[in-house]
Amino acid sequence: MKFTLFSLLISALFLLIGCGGGALTRPPQSEIDTFLEQNEDLSPTDRQVIHSGRFDIGISQKTLQFLLGEPNEIETVRQPWGKQQHWIYGRGKGHKVFILEGDNVVGIRE
Image 1 (spheres, one colour):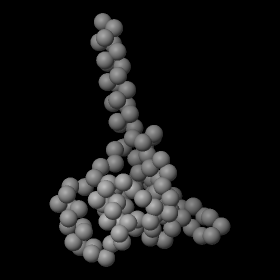
Image 2 (image 1 turned 135 degrees about the vertical axis):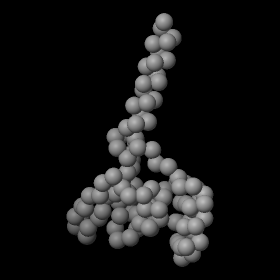
Image 3 (image 1 turned 120 degrees about the horizontal axis):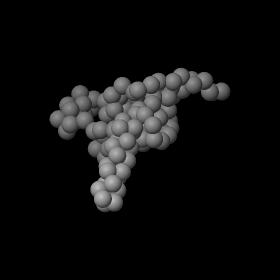
Image 4 (image 1 turned 180 degrees about the vertical axis):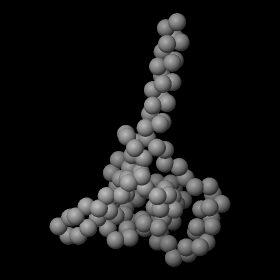
C-alpha cells in the first residue's frame, strides 16, 4: 500500500512539473535543414545554437522565433539606454525569458 501511494505521488509530481513548464522542443531535422538552406547568411552563433540546441546570447530574433515559435508573452521594457523586448516562453518554473535589443538576444533568464 505504501509503495502504491508513493508511486502515485511521484507520478502526480512529474505530471505537475511537466504541465507547468511548457516544454521547449526542437523542430524536426527536416525543418532545420530547410531553415539553414533558406538563411545562408546566419551568424556562426545562430548556426551553433541550431546545431547544439543550447541557447546563447547573440542569436538573432529570426533564429529564436524559428526554434521556439511565438512567445507566450512579449513585454516591452524601457531601459536608460533604450527599449528591450522580453520574450517569455513557457509558464511556471520551466519558463525562459529572452531579452532582445533590436534583432538580437542580449540576455537569457530562467
